[in-house]
Image (cartoon, rainbow, N blue to C red; front, side, top):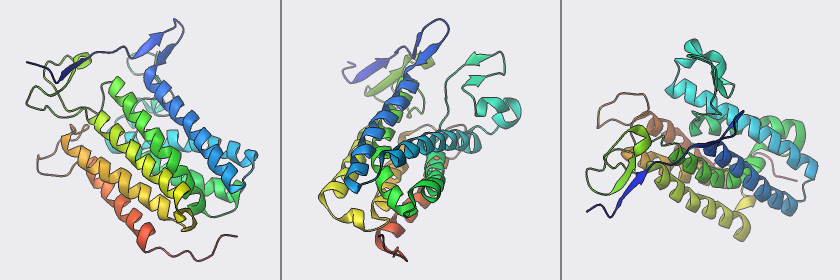
Length: 274
């Protein structure tokens, strides 16, 4: 009996003739829209202007998308640098014929690094507070956005899990498979909901937002701890490794967790916020 088995074969896009509307792209758009609304509420609570909010949205979109794309290329698909360079930055592929693909192949580690850099630039040019002040607040909508990104991965049948070896799991029909795998994308999406709720709670119901770096550190610890453990049931992405060894995603997650612990329990700000 296959009561726990799901045959997954959805459509990935709507063909409008001149344009293919990918559901994966819609998940990113949803993430940014919801993130904007949450940040708007936070900025109102903090007495920040709408102009600074608009600038934050622009810096966030450019930084996160560019960083996520570069992170994927550097860590998982470096051959694009020589084989199809312009596809790194554009939503098209040129190798083997021109085709609109949308922005596919995005790495969360690259997005995290780029988010920190873009927030540094945003703070220096627009906000004029501290980088940690803005990071403590933007991680709340970012955590929620991660939920929708992983749902998008599930729709695309990408970042798949290992075979379950039982009747439980998801059969990714688009990949031509017949055996169930772990729906690793949904595992992550489910856990990220609780990461978001934890951050939301600590911001609105406690005074932890006044402790510079705490919410940012909590975000790093929770999100990349989830990522580390879910990686055990994921297939390795373009990297061969022994079964006992940590994969690329896990190795990249460890420094983020350690940095998060530092900001939660060790870091002392040199200056106080005015």
